[in-house]
Image 1 (cartoon, rainbow, N blue to C red):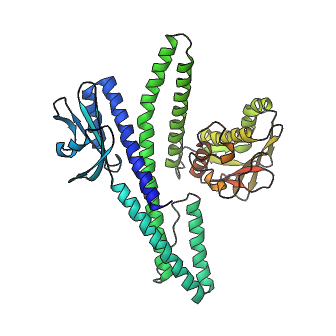
Image 2 (cartoon, helix red, strand yellow):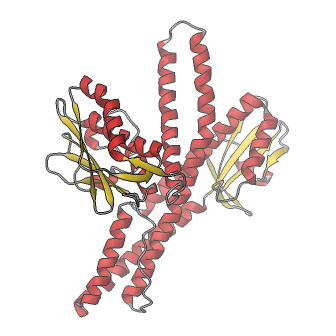
Image 3 (cartoon, rainbow, N blue to C red):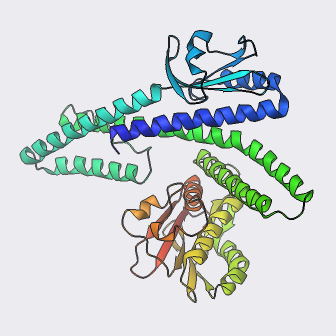
Length: 421
């Protein structure tokens, strides 16, 4: 992605954040009145600058006098339009603002700081320059010092960048203290990874906040549609609207589930011994009627007793997601094989099916939230199931990957065995 594409993407995201904020506060105004808008703005401003993602507000009465917020009248004079406007602020720098006028004559102005755009452009430029310097340094060093030590250090860089490419942004190169070109390059690479991790974490916080903010009004809207549906004759438009709304709620719930699993990574509290063979048998019994309707058959191969320390509900959901995916994408009249075994001090559970192959770089991208296989776009879903599965696996110090096979699609889960095992 080019620097200009990155900047445009962030500008669009800031505009979307403003639009979501305006919609949320408009809902508060319509349902609870202007005083509730004052309270909501005060609560938002009470958050730390990072938590509220650079948000600023001004809420004026019918006469243009301020009711609440932290924006001055001078700044907001140019924002009396419904379209987003960029203005300069002495206190907050460059801002993108949007105004809306409520039915009672009050005016709401919502703004976001544009500093993220400048930072992203600077990071993109710096990363490009560092990449060029790295290539020149590597070419010179390989030509002069083709030694085992050099190959080892370059191998460490490749391994680290490979881990980063698979989504492990906590990976870092070891600091050897060697003041040479490779030492400087390692420091720059660690710096780039750290900046990328912080930027993605910031985006994740914003996404989580939006999910939390949007779920309550959508739930209330669903209740209103249900009430309207019960008071009228069967209306296909209302039924379709509720179906679309429930799809949005499932999407928000999926985002919150992924966020919760990621937040629990490394937390070993409240785990208990779980027999994967027993859990797998329960899942096969649960999904067998669905498989029969599709002309498919579930086969459980428990080759060893595999007991792991886990949260039963989470591991159960992980396995059920894998089986559900296999049923959804497998060819008709084929077997889905769930195998359970041990390898050293690891429990290994795999789900295999005959269906569309997942090749090359798609094997890592398929665990990214919202990713949909290009050959399976017609299938229902939001692309969050496998992202949640991997987050649950990582929470249990395990891994979830696709095992290469020329004829089958195999998802393999590995988890540490309990000490008793």
